[in-house]
Every structure is written in structure tokens, then in C-alpha cells.
Image (tube, rainbow, N blue to C red; front, side):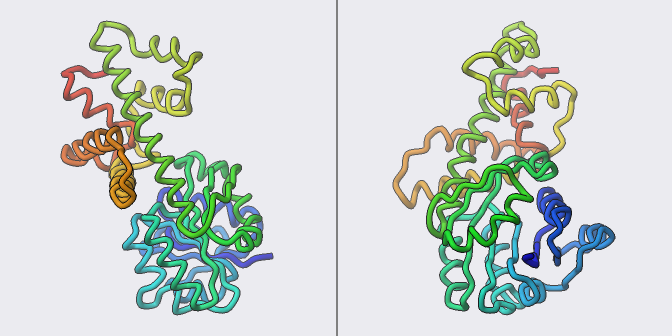
Length: 294
């Protein structure tokens, strides 16, 4: 059985690590904040004090970190994974980062005999907790085959979309749709409310038609209950949108809708709402319209 390392025990990372442990894999973890590490140690994992230390003692090491610079530092920096690399090690990144950075990391690790997979995930805190994530993978098929048993402990859908960086391109495409759905949902709720119709009844009316989607099923009940606590934080949504805009510029791709959505999420951050759920973008639309949905 593979010995697994997991670095980055945030909102989703801790749940993913817990599911890997439940599946029976020996697990070594590392995190900047020790509280999350101590919590998992109490459940049976081993702790390491640097990425280098994790990499040196496992067969496959995962990262789940906020942004591209964090991943580069943990993988390529001092006491990083690359310093603990050994022949046959597989590196898997569950973070959402720039495709170009994923490719650069894969190239540098290949020189050390390490195969790299960029494998960002979608499904939010609920998917991470329940082990039902969607995982989009870029990199060598041979590495994916070896890691697949671990992926099956994390998610229900695993798709190999291409070479290094392809997983991050797929995740960026996913985030184009997610942000658009969050904004569209916010607009329809505010639209109904200000037009004098109960937004709850509007949601019930349209869920059975072409507008039906995960966002409309899951998010409105939380919002109607006054719950805007994060499953996926708004400032992370904006980070992902900035990755999309930068990559689109690199390839000369028109993304005017995403530009507009990024502007709304930027307004969220400017209003001090960045720690709320990405669905709380409805709050910006409420302010612009001068009405609250509840």
C-alpha cells in the first residue's frame, strides 16, 4: 500500500487527508498551523515538520495550498519537497494554480526523477468531507494509474485531461462556470425580490427547468437561512478568476463575462466580505439594487 504525505490542511485539505486515512493509507501530514496537524495526529496520522521531511518518507506527496507562490515555495523552496525527493516519488497538487506554474514545477521535479500530477479538485467543503470530489488531472498516465487508489478515497470522478498543466486548465474552465453561476444566482434572487416576487418561490419554479444546477440546488437554502459562511471563500474565488484572466491574456482568449464577474468579486473583497462564501456575492448585488433577499 502506498505511503502518502499531505501538505496543506485548510478548509478542504484536512477533510481530504482524513478520507485518505480512513481508506487505510499510512499518512504523514504537514501544515504551517500546528492545530490542524495535532487534530489529525490524534486520529492516527504521523506528523512532519517540513515538506522535505514529508517527501523523504512517502511514496506520493500531495499539496493543497492557497496560490501559485505558496506551491512553488513548498515544492521548490528551502526545505521543500524537491530537497526530499527520491527516485520513484510521485507529487500531486490539489491546489488551484496557474497552468504555467504547474508545468514549470513538473519540469523541475522530472529532473529529480519525480513524476508530477496537477490534480485540482472541485466540490467544495461538502465534497471534500464526503469524499465525492471531482478531480481533473494533468500529467503522466503512468503516475495517475499508481495514485488512482488514493484518488478514489478522495473523489467520485477522476478525469485525465492531458499533460502537465492540463488539470489546471480544466480547473480554470470549471471556475469560469462556477463564478458565472454564483453571480447569475445572486442576480436572479435580487431581481425577483425587487420585482415583488418571493425569491424562494422563484427558485422552486425554475429548478425543474433548464436553469437547474448544483448551485441552485445547494446555495439558495443557505442564503435564505442567513448562512453565508464559507464552503469556498470569496477571496479564493477571486484568486481563481485572476488566474483565468491572466491565462486568457496569454492565449488571447476573450472572457468578457469572466471579467465582469471578477469585478463583482473584487467589490466583495473591497467591502470586507472576502472570508464569506462565494455565493455571498449576492450581497454586492443587494447593495447595488438597494434590496435584501431576506
